[in-house]
Image 1: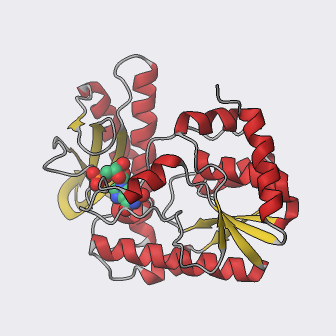
Image 2 (image 1 turned 180 degrees about the vertical axis):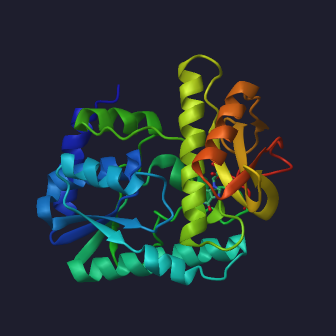
Length: 314
Ligand code: XMP
């Protein structure tokens, strides 16, 4: 039987033994990195710095939630607002793989900068067993470079400590509960965030449209699932398409954005079928998006399965 309390005590001791100076940790706000942050903070106090990078590409309220959570858990942390740097680096870039590489490289550059400023000698990561088992095996999806931007490369000149590396997700959740970590169990979200949900160039304005549209899709599907109208899909979100189309507002012709809604059923993200959302729910989503986001005049629903499509549009 897995004993979360004994595990926590054991890891606090192990981290104290392994880290004599300072350590830094990349916190994405997810359950793994937040749990690792709380354990490391118990071991090291102010000798730990948890760093969260706000790329400007995050979901509505996400950065603030992370800040509130880490404060409540008394983890010493720093929120780095790097949105200007990300938008600058992504200027004019439309190719999805280039977007991924730019975002990953920028993350490493910023994190190295923070580590040097803080004087860290150790990097603590929230890696769990499936992360390293999958990366060593043949299971990796080679269709897109799925490097999680919260995962840092071994070439960084920091010694690596991974307190959760033998745990599976259900065990991490038990440890999280024992530590009082309450991270909302949100659906999977890609590391490059909204950069791959804005098709074409990533600008603050276009990200703002998709952020709002995604929040509406989440709210409406979660409300519908709460009322028993449907079960919650594996993933559900909006994308901003790189097309303008003609519409009408009152008597006036407008040339506006098109938003695509994606909802898919899957077990592991490797394959999936599009969700058969009730039309009344789709209707609410469409009306809300076009009413609340004035620059959007058309909403389409994605009825493709994976394969041949992928879950994300980029
Ligand atoms: P696709 O679009 O390949 O997505 O069918 C499968 C799952 O992976 C997520 N995804 C990513 N996750 N970095 C990530 O960390 C990425 O670049 C990335 N691209 C896709 C996607 O949201 C889905 O859960």
